[in-house]
Length: 270
Image (cartoon, rainbow, N blue to C red; front, side):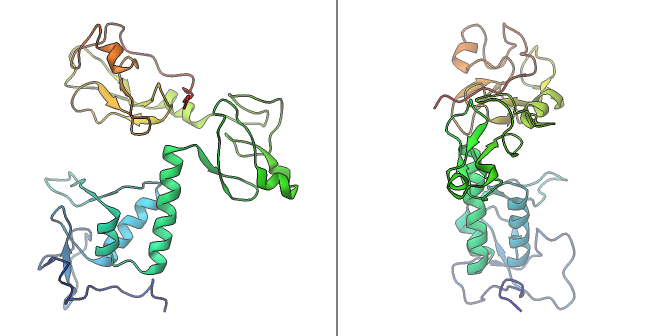
């Protein structure tokens, strides 16, 4: 049996961990009779065991999330939501060398995909970055050197490029469409209860500066800070905060009203 598949346990002599006599907060099932496996306390105060912590964090990575947040309930069904740094997860999950390599490769890819325009080339599977954000026709230099038919592919549908280029909307392949735009057009609505005079607004917006899809947590003021470009904008009217505040304030309706659903993705001029 490989090291990754064997049951992991804490070393009771490890003085760097805080052991607690409590059930595993990440495991909904009660412990079996005679189970004397140690639990350790995370920085948020919840108890974990290495197997459950490894499984939870791996599931987050598989869902495309690169931050680890505690799912343990606090009050009722509300989750703790505390963010654990990877260094803490690595230690308390007792990650093996194989697991660390897997986790760190996924973390790197997910972070790169969020903060840069990275995708895996459909031909050679190499991760490549698109520099010309207004052109969906991408030429992979690795595929070009090997003569593969995918040397030019569509950044949107990931099929060999068809039609004229450059284009920023789509290629001529059937069913090539912008899934992000479809999401912006079809998402539900939310209400910002602490902002007076504002009705329902789309639940997902594209940052007007860089185009990153963002959601409002429905608390506090109407403005949001984009996690990618770090530019603050109004979730209601989609103006930059400094422009919106010239005729409004953080907790009242915008003078220009609610911006309609976005029909084009903003292009980040880096």
